Amino acid sequence: MQPLDKTQILATQYKNWQDNLTATKTNHPAYNSSGGQFYYDIISNLIWLQKGLCAYSEFKLQAYVKCGAEFWINGVFPKFTFAGELDHYDPTLKTNQAWLWDNFFLIDSDVNSKKVKGSKQPKGLLKPDKEGFSPAYFLEYDISNHLFIPNKDREFDEQALIKHDLDTLGLNWQPTVERRATYLNDIIIDVKYGITTFEAAEQQLYQFFTAFKLCRNYISK
Image 1 (cartoon, rainbow, N blue to C red):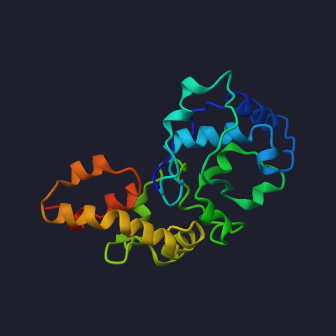
Image 2 (image 1 turned 45 degrees about the horizontal axis):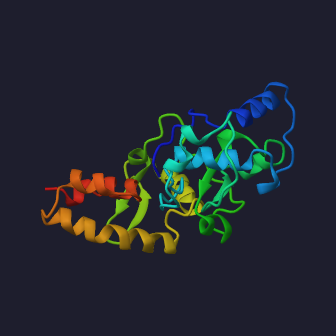
């Protein structure tokens, strides 16, 4: 997963509403998915900020340019068809803070709905919008099996927390692993044997950026 800067707010009407709830210490309305007043605004803003990727797996969901600032009208985005689902990173906040911006990510529907993430609670180490978040600090990449693994330089207890978050967020869920391997294998071979450079290959990527970046020391000459 790539670090995300969620400070660019295009959904201004939603954010003003949420900030007012926070300022007045008012509980949020119950979460009712697409029935929520600002649901599509939140989705559209996340598509733009996440560049159309699943926030966890980095699987490409859709083109993001159609959700750019020029398509918003007074901080609102029209309803539209999209891929993925809105995920509450910390599901415990869904009770009283169900519409909290800091707790939302757009993720692959399969990761969210097939008991991969669902209502599981991550430990918070692998939260892409966390200040100073660096994938390389927490993660290494097993290039042979296309699996993310905890960085061996971390303490044993921290590695266990990282492993928990990897499992909870679906980064090593088998269908995701297969997608990643299918997409990256030929690219890795081309770099390894000098057909292209790492930099040139990286410029052509449209998904799975973190996995490829963590491969650099193994494939670059």
